[in-house]
Image (tube, rainbow, N blue to C red; front, side, top):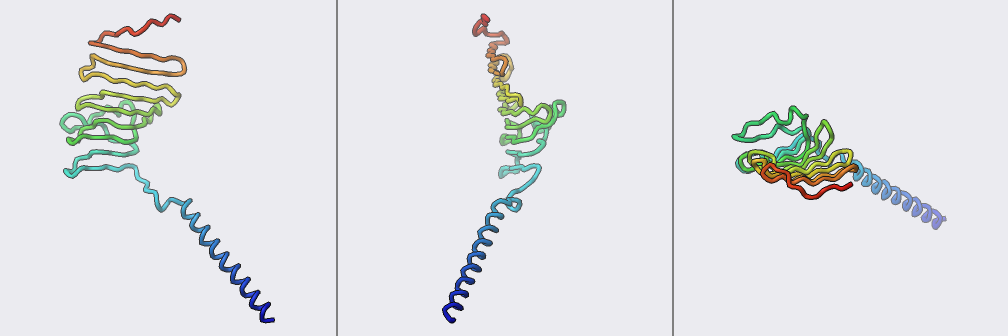
Length: 169
């Protein structure tokens, strides 16, 4: 009888210990699946340098561009707002970014000089893509674009189109 009782207690102990391990493991899996305590939800983050100058802004609806003498322009208001990552130089001027716009849903990668945009990569939601680079004075420009319907390469030197090829089709 002692052997049967010892066997029953041992079996009960094994079952309880196994259920304890199982509950510990499954609660750990639930914590891994539920990331709400590990994800930070904010509408924006501003990263400043040691002088307090804004250098990177990550945001859902970024501020207007900051060109020339630190004043914000109204360039984006007429075309809608953008969200993403914007980069600024040591003087706080916008120098480029990776954003999406609210109106069309385009994704942009831009690089800017101190006074204007110099390079643009754009991916449209329907699949077309364009890359453009241009000189500071705007007289020289290279553009490469592709869509399901067409592909195009355009070069301009001193505001004159440079002929690359003739489409004989």
